[in-house]
Image (cartoon, rainbow, N blue to C red; front, side, top):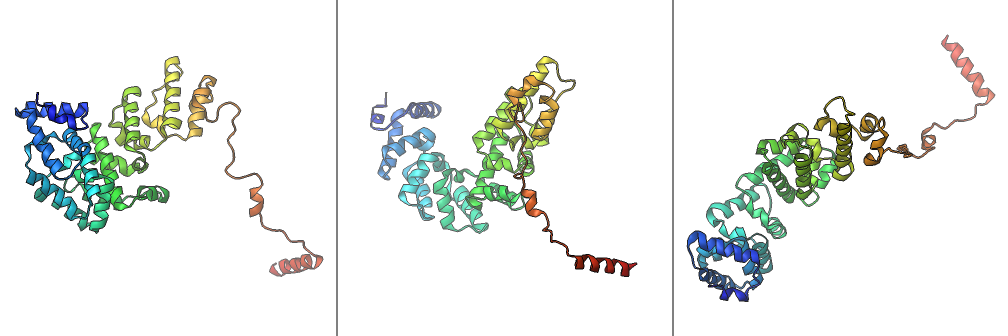
Amino acid sequence: MGFSNFVLLSSSPLMIKSVLEQSKRFQIDPDGFFKSVEVLRGLGFIDGTVSKVLEGFPGVILMNGKEIQRRLEFLAGIGIPRDGIDRVLRSFPGFIGFGVEDRLKPLLYEFKDFGFSVDVISREIIKEPRILSMELGEFSQCLEFLRTLKCRVPIKEKIFSEGEFRAGFEVKLRVDCLCRYGLIRREAFEVLWKEPRSIIYKVGEIERKIEFLILRMKFNSRCLVEVPEYLGVNFEKQIIPRHNVIEYLRSKGGLGYEVGLKGLVKPSRLRFYNLYVKPYPDCAKMFGRFSGDVKVQSRHPVGLWKLFKPQRYPESKEDVKNTKLFMESLG
């Protein structure tokens, strides 16, 4: 009942589900959603975009055309073209639910207070519409964090590779990620401060590491506050092999003490190998590095030291005689 009008849309099961849930919640006939469809179509949006809005923000049914129009005028007012507005609605339809005066404009002023021009702001919003989801004051906290961050130059260059504005938003995403796993915001910033490499990793990679930490390694997520280095090391090459070695030794009773997260992550690869792999040949294959006939190569090619060796000059008899006379004069 009431869905005949939606046949014209590129509807998805998720959109139908959202429509039904919103109808039940507010006791609205599903046909009421078609009014919003007509409003969005009247504003020039194609059915694909309308479907995304209904799927991601079914609360649009409670808004009238003027309210929707004001949100779109805000985007146009900061220089976002028509196709850019369409991208914002597709990627982040929840934007329609934000008030212009109490949320969007103050957020724009916050961006400007840090010296970003409207052109930069609009360009970044088109690239990543979720920037509009930031709470007031959140961007300031993230950017001030970055401007006082101390780390190696190559890491800092990667963090700011897409500009300072985007870097601030990337910090926000990682803080949110850590908070979803039980850390408070202060602890999340502390982890990023101590391990800036985690800002370089994608959020999905960080989530995979944390889930492995909790589900497989049986550690609490709050261990990250004490050992933030865990998020900065390579998952496939370091975390998994070391975990497999420790678990194998623990199952065989080869460990005389408990190895915590710090003992698993912090030792260098060579030190970990010497402690837990070299004495137990069975662990060589699961660890990989330094096992078997693999040799640790020197950091410089053989013979490079010769380039730094001072050049020797042949000494004549006259040079020897002068040197002896000089030394005798000192005596």
